[in-house]
Image 1 (cartoon, rainbow, N blue to C red):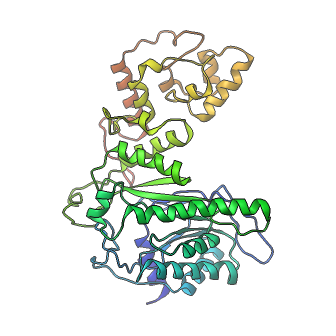
Image 2 (cartoon, rainbow, N blue to C red):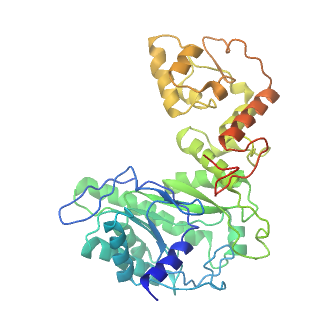
Image 3 (cartoon, rainbow, N blue to C red):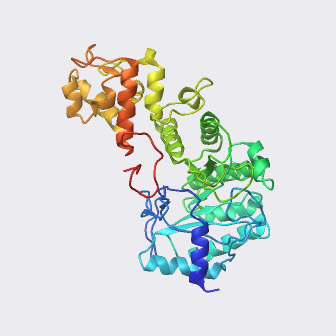
Length: 425
């Protein structure tokens, strides 16, 4: 099979792997090498189905010894199969780079023969790129659960970022849909990557030229909508992954119907839960940058997001005791919890009030968008003059703003991947 035919098959097979991330690593150009990695990330483009493609995103092979029901590459699925050789993939990457098509490589793989064999093939590909072709650009590689720890470490010395897909949010879902996998097997390489990165940082403090292990950290992905776990379950798992394994990102992938397994959503008429994926990303942002915990965002009484509201506004309406926030006295963390005020806006408010009390006009001059925030703040103890509202009226107003922001028109609808009505601008 020709290399371009292999690329067509293996690039298409990689499109379900969500990893819309910047590189997170700085490595300048060196004499005798080609390519650089910058923390502003690689150039992003978008595939036809709306997925963000930052790099040459490809599988090493789609031959797989596993039979995961949700995966298009499962061994029982009748699809064209192929595999690169390490030399073919390394040469392809360099040719794409030289033509300015890409700035780096995202390399994943199905499990060919066994995890060790697959990891060895990936290592050989990256070794060729780094040593023979002198490629100095960004590389994101998927670690294979079950591989020997020494192989995972070797892979991390060649890649900038490693990731291990957690796939499904619970052990029971894995047993049902991916019987060849287990949470223990998935979490083990996550711990290895965490410990390898810590060891590398310690060595770099002692030896300036010590090898760097996955300097951009690790990430993971889980599929949303294939199994019945609640949003609260998924968000709590996400929080635990950040804390225990020091992940840089958790990616959520709306389930695409690729199987007729009896435990999966019926493909006929099924819409991928893209709006739910969007809400999870918004809540993930609250976890990482806004000081929220998973237990605050969702609880036993509210285990799932209100699809009509962003998670921050939903939390605010469920916690009226926290509001209104007095912008001239509240601390930065409290201001961050006001719907419509982001990190930059909160920083501007804290900086500006040092020179005198802020008014609503002053907030507008700072660039604060008042459409959402006006219901939750006071300036010098006063609400916005003439503002009258109830909880129900605020809910209607906020849901209307959200519909407009997501292109929903007069009726709420699923986000679209392809534009037109429902498109996320």
